[in-house]
Image 1: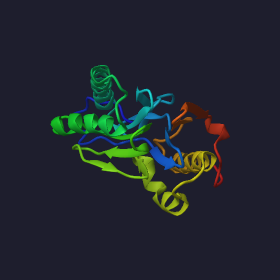
Image 2: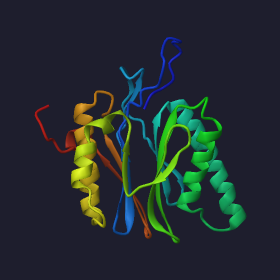
Image 3: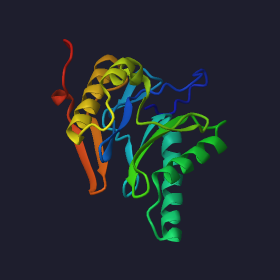
Image 4: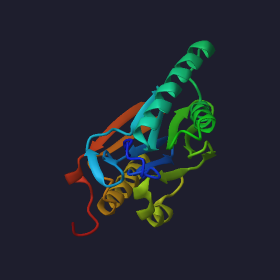
Length: 217
């Protein structure tokens, strides 16, 4: 996750993060690291929580420009809250993802941020959606994003299984974050994980020194 830099010579925004969401039998796990960087080089914070609750059982992860992502999420939370009051029912996960998609598409020339939206609703159960730069919306059973994701595509492809148990999915997500954080210099800190099911929401924080190790560090 990157904060805006005022240097006009910076041509783009490094995503500087690792985010992941995966469905399991009865719920979803959505997670991220906690490191923020400027220019993809200077670590400006080690304690950013990139897993944001946008409604009771809907969460999203952000990657790209931190300022852009926070502005989009703030607007999305307001729209979903209003939608919930008007409809007198909690919003669907696809509704939250669609709001983010609309905001990203309508402002695609100004924004440099992407999102993963995950949650549970009574209509479709556990769901994961990707809203990429420019406003493309895709549903997937598992997805990863950010600069750290480039190191774990093989792991995710090999180890993710549909209908995993809650414990299996938590371990899969924790391992994936640990692998990415061990290789990507702008991913790190602690692992923030959120488990969303029909019965509720559980937050899990794994300190950096408690993450599994797969190589000498």
